[in-house]
Length: 413
Image (cartoon, rainbow, N blue to C red; front, side, top):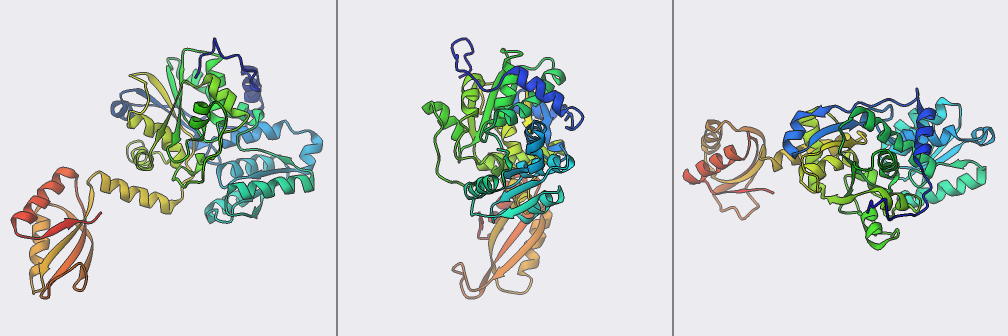
C-alpha cells in the first residue's frame, strides 16, 4: 500500500476536492481541537495528539461529509429533499445540516436502533422511518423511498463528495500539528480515512497513514489483501460505527493508494481504550471512536516514537454499554473482583470474613448468599462478594490472606 510512485489508479477524489470542501464547510463545522497528550504519549511510546471529532455538534465527524454533499445539491434536488440510511452518526449529521438549510431529511433506521439515537435524529429535524433487521435492509428501503419520491440519497461513505468532506480533517491536522509524522484513523467503509489520506499524502507524502479496524469486521483489510472489496459475514462489535461488511467501491482505490498500514484490534482492547480516554483524558468516545487509540495502546502499529495524530472520531455511546465497559475495565485492571467464598453456616461467620476483608482495605459493593447451589455441604454456605480494590497487588494480598485463614474461595469470572 501507499507507494505513490507506482500506483497510477485514476481516483475519484483529489486534494483540490478536499480544499473546495473546506470552503463549503467553513463556518458550519467546528474546527475541532487537537491537543497533545502527555499521559497517552507515555503509555504508547508515541507523541500523541488527539483530534477530538467527538466534540462536533452531532458528536461525530460524519457531519463533514454530509454537509459537503448537501451543500452541492442543486436547487431542484434541495427542494425534493434527501434520504439516508443509518443507525446513528450519519443519520444525525444529515438531519442536522439538512434541517438547518430548510431541506427535508428522511432517515431510515433499523428496527433495533437504540431509542436514544432515534430520538436524537428526530430532534435534529429529520423524519425517521424504522425498517429492517439491519443496516442492509434499512438501506434497501431508503433506496426504494429515494426512487419513489425522487429524493437524493446521501451515502455514509461510498461517495467522493462525502469523502472529500471527511478529508477536511486532514487539512486541519497539517495546520494543528506542523511536526506531524503519522495519523491513525478508524476504518469502516473507508470514507474517513480515504479523505484524510488524500489530503495528507498529496500535501506531505512523508506522513504515514495507518488505518484501524475491528478484528470482527476487517472489510477494508480483506479488500486490500484480495485487491478488491469483499463482503464479510455479519458480526457484532462494540465499534458499531465501523461495523461495515464491505469496503466501498469508491473508497477502496483511495485507501489502496494512500494508506500505509491497516491493523485490527479486539473487543476488549477497544473497551480498554474507551476507559483510558474517559479516565485519563476526560474524553468520551464510542467504540469506533476509540479504535485508533486502542491500536497504539496495544502496540499494533509499526510506528516508533512518531508525532502521531489519533482520531477520536465519535462520542455517541449508549450509556448502558458505557457502564458495562467501565465495569469490565475495572475487572481487567484488578480494581474490581468477585469472589465465591465458602463459610460455616453459623452466627458470626460473616462478621469474621468482613473483618478480614476490611483489614486489607477492600470495599464490599455487593453480596449474594447461597445454601442450595455450587455443591455446598449441609451446614455450610457460600457467599459471592464483589469488591472494589486498588489493583492486582492488593487482590493478591487479599487472596493470600483468605487462603492463610482457611477460607475455600475462587474467583467468579
